[in-house]
Amino acid sequence: MEKIRCPHCSAMNQDVKESDKCWQCGNPLGAKEVTPAAEPKQAVVQLGIEERVALRKAEKKNDGIAASFAMVAVTLLILTIIVIFIMRGHW
Image 1 (cartoon, rainbow, N blue to C red):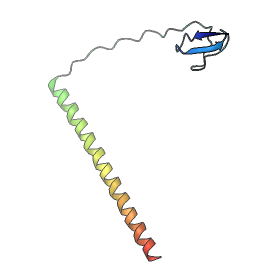
Image 2 (image 1 turned 120 degrees about the horizontal axis):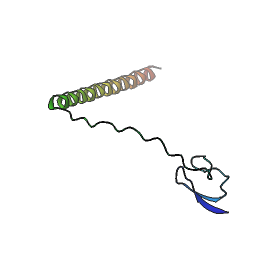
Image 3 (image 1 turned 90 degrees about the vertical axis):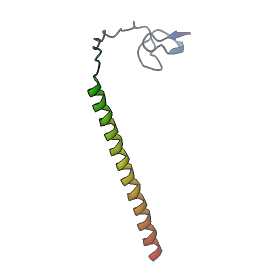
Image 4 (image 1 turned 90 degrees about the horizontal axis):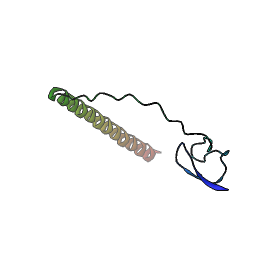
């Protein structure tokens, strides 16, 4: 048996025949590589200063919301631990 490089994912397959399947992607080793259809190129868009400022403000706002959510979660966790500690002390 021999080593065969998979035409689909380029993984090296050892001790296989062309009728076997690739260990990594599962495609037959003897099959021809299927080339994907060419993807249409996207137009490059230049953002103006106003658009860039608006994007940065939106990113900062999202970061602030995430930080607020994290603070609320930590506060609730601490309060839960305190309540459990108090309840265990009374039993």
